Image (cartoon, rainbow, N blue to C red; front, side, top):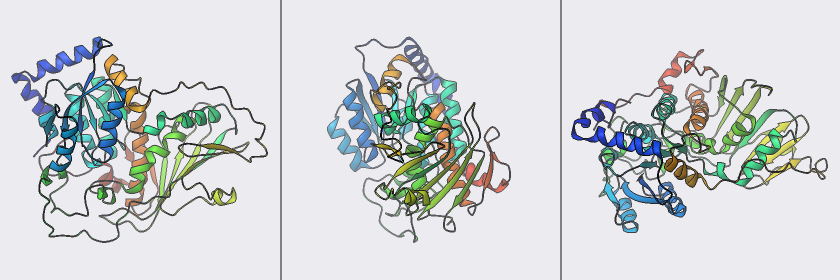
Length: 434
């Protein structure tokens, strides 16, 4: 089935949908009273979606009014916990439910843009898991549409709300280790595939396979695609870099005010047309910003780590972000950070906190939705869109045979590699138009 796009939406206006959107938009512009709750529909109900459902519940400010899932087992389980919520297999049907104020999306990457765009165009606020979309073109369109529709958005990089990231940003921007021209980010994890999918397997009862595929050209069901393992396949995800880099590169982007890279080069095994690599390195060049110097940032996944990690005896840091400054180093993960060399910084007094404590990634979004404040969530799409684009460019370089690409962000072109277009803009099944 083709997606619920703007043309479909306008056709529905005659039946009253357009009137409802106008009312919703007016309501958002005016804000809601403190006693109101935000009516949220959740697309996806298991795994990461289940985590998000629980986090929404903790805010105390949400009514869960609808669930969408293509697997009846997961949908039933969610409905048992929230029996008043309506259930759907197709997100397009859910968007016709009039009391939905906002949509949280936690499904495979290949469907992110389709649900996000439909929700934004129908007047809803959106929270979407990382990365924002499955291709650079999709991310750009999502970012631009959120700005055009003036909806409140947030990408699911939950660790951005943690205290540790805030303290690291203050240290780096306060000059604790001096100007930073080099950053290394590594994670000891790998989503990869090294053999063809199993074929001829029976479709599990209650799985709506055609809806799960969405815009992906038709292919038979295989248990090697889902649940969760879809990240191993280019058709549905982007491997480890797509899964984790938005979390980890988020911190240097924030601390160093990074914009768009100008050059990207991947190192990895020979690329496979169907499945993601066992390991990957991605080297990014970011230009100077204001009074900040250019930055070389390198991403490592699988079993790869920077040589500098061994030199600094960081073997106990399975995952890490290492800032290299003119006056020293700062190593951090999600929960801790340390200035190096330790003897040099033993008497160092950190600056007083200047970045306010977060109420939580989900509550930030919910409160902003209730006040219709699009820029309040720190990971709104104007911030997380460029982050997602940079992450996806690492995968594009790898799929081009680990070739360096020169990136013109304004034109959304790899100026030295016209053949990159096939990975920047995907081909969809007939009838699916963004």
